[in-house]
Length: 222
Image (tube, rainbow, N blue to C red):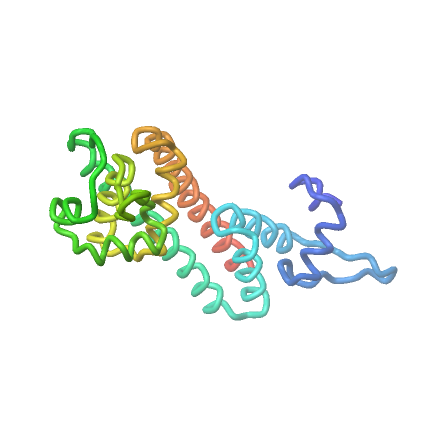
């Protein structure tokens, strides 16, 4: 089947796409064979382009909506996906801003307790305890007094959390970012991760443009 061969797909995959509503229904010959037209080729191109930018599930929902004539529903799905990309860009920017604000501060040395740390950063001790419960910081306990002891790495995590909270991010959004800093062994090793993250977001944005162009071509042809 030319349609399948052009995109490196199996004939069964094309049938599956049609059955799923991703492609419009094909006409049948007198012998029951499906007949695919340039319109089906356009639908397939649009779908594959949308997958690259929006993911398989959203791309499927978009094409199903278009093929049942609910174009406004399809456009809403696209808008929602673009909104998610914008949120991801804002999150990345917030992390980069927070890390940049941390950079000029001298390396923390030694351990500290909750009182001195809260006074230094202008944070209430109750807030630090709340962040601990949320997993943002993990101070150890002094075996004799039971007091919380914050290491240099703990102070770094508190300061990063403080920056992100001031940027309006929720604790559940901050926790995985702090975990990534810990896993990377500090702020510096994250630089390459952030570059890769930005590159992926840019590639996703470009793919969305390609998907929009191919979907528009399919809508015009229909």
